Image (cartoon, rainbow, N blue to C red; front, side, top):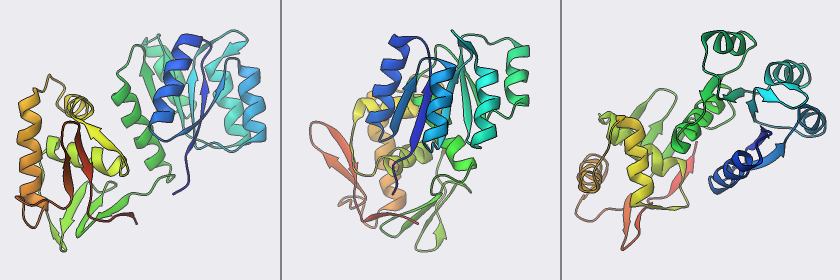
Amino acid sequence: MRVKRILLLEDDQAIAKNLVLLLRAEGFSVAHAATMRQALELVSGKKFDLALVDIALPDGNGFAACTQMRRSENIPVIFLTASGDEASVVTGLSLGADDYVIKPFRPRELLARIENALRKAGRVQSTFAVGDVLVDTAGGTVRKDGKEVFLSALEYRLLLAFVNSPNAVLTRERLLDELWDAAGEFVADNTLSVYIKRLREKIEDDPARPRLILTVRGIGYRLGGGYAAQ
């Protein structure tokens, strides 16, 4: 699977540093520009799958940057800004932006919005196989042996966490963040164990001897079962 390239246009160095670290930890390739001029030079020389664009820039604004980027390469754009007024949101979306994220934001929320924008643009696979379980993220369905498996919102979000990081060991803290984002409220540590158990009961042949959601003692869980993007 090709590594997705993200252009980050952000003049705040502290914010940019944290975002670069976050995105690279999630497997993205990231190029950072602090000015509109730098961003347009990068876009003219390289191909990107998505752009994260701050609106307030030292040599212009994100709206102008978005317009010029789309002239040379039609890539998904997500605006990052501290301005949440309605006029700014409408302007950004009318320019064709795919999303608008107001600072401060939770890292997991931003990553989910990035994945959604990439998926809508057809730049990520939407169907994944984990053993005999088929996950269709475009349709929001899960099938086992050809039969649909009905998951709750939290169970589905938990499964997506594993599918989106197939080669990683996911700590309990990371998974709790995923469930918190989906539920919109605090999720306790013992709740994670409950949802892991419920998910295994629905997708494993033998939940007592799991092959798909594996326990890594003292750390968390990882995906097993022969993962493949379709």
